Every structure is written in C-alpha cells, then in structure tokens.
Image (cartoon, rainbow, N blue to C red; front, side, top):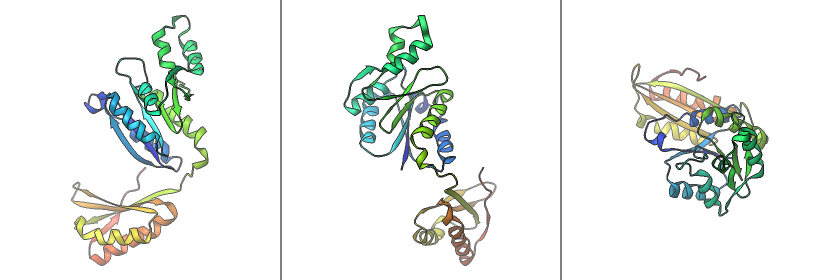
Length: 249
C-alpha cells in the first residue's frame, strides 16, 4: 500500500510558512513500518486542487491532504474534493453535531459551512477544537494547523490501516565513502539493486566536513545487512576508503 501527501496553501509556496507536515507524516508512517511514497505542494488554486484530487482519487493510494478545509474565501479543499469525486456538498450530520457542540449558542451559518462535506464522506474527529476533517474513500482531509492535523492523522492510521502495520520491517544503513565520485559507484549500485530488488540504493554527495558520498540502502529489514555488505566489499574492490555512517535517530 502506497501513501501520499498533498499540502495545500499559498503561504507554503510563498515561503511565509515552512511546511512541517511532510516530515511529521514520514515520522508517523515510519513508526508503523510504513513509508511515504510521494508528496505534492499546491497553492490555493481551485482548478489545480480539483484536477490533482481527480487524478489521485482515481488511484489506489492512501492520501493525506493538509489545509484548506475551513470556511474562509481561500479555503477551497472541501469544494474541490466534491467536484473531483463528482458529488455535491452537504451539511454532514456528524459534523453538525461536533460544530454545534463546539460553539453552542454562538453557532452561525458561516461556522456550519465547515461541516459541509462531499456527499459520502465520513468525519475525522478533531480533538483540538471539534471542527472535523473528513475522509472520502482512502483520501483523508485535515486542517493545516499541526496541533490539529497530526493527532487526526494518527487516529486515521490507527483505525483504518492497522492491518498494514509492520514496525521494524523497514531499515536503512549507509557508509561514508571518501575520494569517490558518484559516477564511479554507479555499477556497484546497480549490482546491489539487482541482487536485492526489494531495497532502494541511494548515494548522497556531501561537502562537509569534507567532500564525501553517503552510500546506502533502505527497505526490507532482512535484506539490509547483506546488501550493505555488498556495498562495503565493492567499495573496497574499487580502492576507496569508507566508514560506517552514523545511525539516524
């Protein structure tokens, strides 16, 4: 099962705010033995949001969408999701209950608009302020505020996808290779990939504290020790010095 992320908001693309959702989603998935397959940033452009969701809704990926589900003029995600799915918007009864419970006598039509969701949606409870997100199939729409969004994402993962959890099933190891250029390691990387197709082989050139390449593998935990051994032996054969990279935490 593949997981994707859509992060919506002009403030991200303008640099006014820095995205924190993608690294957090990687962390939440990784703790459950899952991986993020892709991520996409979108501005507050209804046509772009709609076309993107129409494409992703037609696929099989689990998608988390962050932002744009409020009721201000720049919040388009609810309407765009409905258009992409070919359905209308309606006041969801469970969302109405939550919103009325949140505002009580201060309820307004504008606040109830946040409960107008694509037909066929299920709400995602918001433990922060009770303004819910929503799920449409395997697409899950949460607010752009991290303190709201992240507990909601965790709840979706733990209730909808627990059967796919495999903590410890994904591992990564790498070595630091000095004196080599990436082009000199390509044949070795392809050799390792051919022998261990369940893994991804990567090389990351770095300039500090001195020029070197981090060469490693990531994927099925049971294949990683043998695969890193292939890389270590191959680097030895090529005549380059290497050392184990620090373990990421």
